[in-house]
Length: 301
Ligand code: CP
Image (cartoon, rainbow, N blue to C red):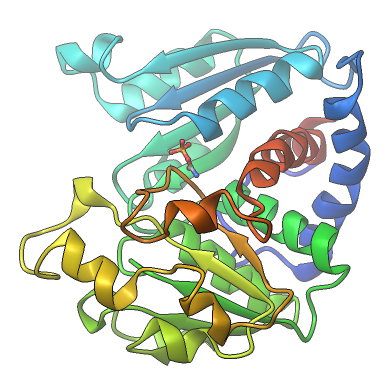
């Protein structure tokens, strides 16, 4: 049994594939009329979120419910965190209630890594600062596999606000491990230094990164994390770096479009692209439930 899922940087390719293969079975359950298995019967799953979320938190809670677990949630604003209780004390308190799986989102990189050795519960990183968001990348990989049948040899363009994106980091680590050719593009102010060391090719324009891409993964402009001066305005960002049907011409004709959500429509992606035939954004959400079921089974099943 594995204890935690904190990131994909050090997770071997065969473990990633085990989670993705098992998610096929989980997706059948998600799409069925009787969404119930008993893999986590008697277990308790708690989501502890210090940052807002719709997809990740809800999909973990639904996944836990479909698997027969007791699911509970706690947010920083509605808990004793607001009275000044520390992260460590909060996590130990939740652990002491008999929690089996603790799913954490925190604004500080490394927060789940700090907590994991201090608690008996399995810890799943649901996004830590600018570091990793492993289950988002796993559902992205699953969606690529479902649509393209393979990952090895595909060209994946990751474009937008790479600097602030934990989604980009987890995806680059996993995609490189599974043999994809990864290109990254965006404004130079939103490209972190040393990105080339991951094995990704780095471009200062989205067009160059997208040439002949099989998959175009857009990233949200993280308005809540922007310092001023990284780009002049959202309108200007859209003009030079936004993706629309016209810019998609740089990618292959059958390229698919991914985005972790929530999308800033008219900024990183046009509405036509979000709602268009190549967009897999809603399927990513469905796949998120299946992949998170698979992750919890991998940890505790
Ligand atoms: N992709 C993602 O993490 O979305 P939420 O912030 O809604 O969970």
